Each structure stands twice: as C-alpha cells, then as structure tokens.
Length: 336
Ligand SMILES: [Zn+2]
Image (tube, rainbow, N blue to C red; front, top):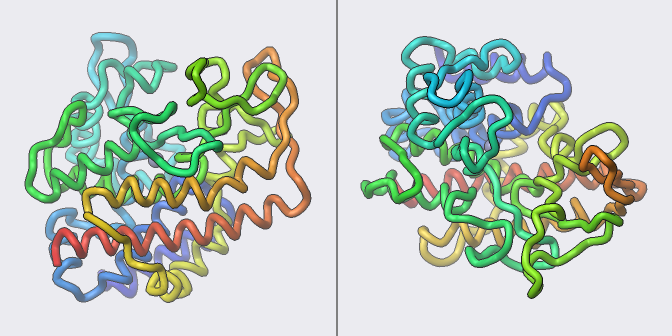
C-alpha cells in the first residue's frame, strides 16, 4: 500500500468518526505530524526500520497496552481489550498481543480490575500531577514521581540512545521505547496529563507543596474527579474534534509545526523543558473553572466561564502541533 493510500484511508477513518478521544485521534495526529515532518529523511528510515510502521500507528500502542490485565493476583497477564478501541485492531494479532502482555508484566506488580496505578505501574507512566500554583516541572514537587510521564520519557530516550532501561522502567527494546515515546510526547502536551488542581472538601484550591504536604484526599486525579455537567474534565481534554484531527493531518499541522521554536539545552532535559512549557501554557484549562464542595462519591462539580470549550479546542490544537514538532525534533536529534 502506498503512503498516499494510507493517508487517504486514515483521513477517511477520521472523517467517519466526528468526535473521538485525544486517546486515539490526538495521539495519531501527533504521530502523523511527526511522520510528515520526517518524510524522506534518514531519521524516517530508521524509525520505520525499528517500528515496522509509521509513528501515527505506533502512537496509540501504549494506550492499547492498557487492555492487558489479570483476572486476579497471580493469574497470567492477558490482553482482553479488543472491541471498544478500533485503533487497537492493528495490534490485535498473537505476536502484537504477546508484546503488549510482556510489556505490562514487566512494568506492573499486579494489574487486575480496579488495581491502582501504583501496582499496575505502566499506567502511571502516562501522566504527572504538578500543582497549578507552580511555574515549572521538577522531580521534587508534589504529584511527580520516579515512574511518572517525565521519568518514562527520559527512560525511553536512554534506551533509544543504546543505554539500559533505568529502574523502575523495564523497557525491553528500541521498538518498545519508540512506541512508548511516540505516545508519551502526546501525553506531555495534554494539559490534564501534566497540570493538576488540588482541592479541599469545600472546593477551594490548596497547595500540595506547602509545609503541610500532599493530602491524597485533595487529589483530583488529573481531572477525573472533576465534573463539568455530567462529563469528567479529563475526558473532555482527551477529546479532540474529528474535524481538528483531519485539518491538522491534511497539511495544516505540518505547516504550523515547522514554526515551533527548537528546544533549548541538552536533549536529556527536553522532557522536563516540555513539561514546564505545558505547566505554563495550560493553566487556563483549570484556572478558567470554579468548583463546588466535594460530593459523597469523591467528585467535585465544576463550572466553566463562557467560551471555555472554544478556548479548549484552541489550546488542544496548539499543544498537538507542538507535540508533533517535538517528536520529530527528538527523533532527528537521536538519529540525525
Ligand atoms: Zn497516555
């Protein structure tokens, strides 16, 4: 199949699904923009040789791997995610399912229904929770960890540069590292995967980095316990309009991505730099809201000012363009 036919098919798929999660379509758009930026380069050849696919396809692998679980502690890790995620059908064959199962087994203590991200550890690789009061990402801040998104990106870069996977990450190959990195570049640009608001029972913002320390009861779990109407705030920010994905993949994304400034400093520090950029650019995602008291089910009701959803789409577009540009920039730096 020619590349051109592939992209027409992808566009058709996107057009047929008007609203989908940042999950698949946000990530695929990030990967697709990077594919277009790298087209014809030696970097692109290296990427294709390692992945056996393009970045657009690889960018959803880390989410598809969330379909791996255990019936209960001590039972085998099995991929059972088929069905609800059409973008994962590409990986629903025996060899690919085994690859996802192997990855989760290495990167989880247990992973049964409702097990926390601390024990089903690979799920925590997708985010960090820097408080909205901060102006940068740093590893000593509340909400960050040695197995958060930024640490995960750094581990992937180490493996792609030929190093050993640093603990606690168990990344087995460059193929696995590249699949993960293609996804994590999207996550580090999704505002609610990086910036968090911590609330007391009355719905007032608290500072988890203050002397009293982080009270777990104040965590809003990346916006998963903040409800805007009936919708989880996290889900709203994961969702991008299908029309936006189509517009960006049809050429507008690559054109804008060429204007994204180059990342400064050492390559190993870029994940921290990008997380800081998201902290600073994405505060309106939470600052534009007010919150009511915590409900018995552990959620807080949120109220948005007029124009919030329009601003959301504008910020999502900006972040996806940056993510695509930076994924290409990073891979070019690793394989010039
Ligand atoms: Zn993710």
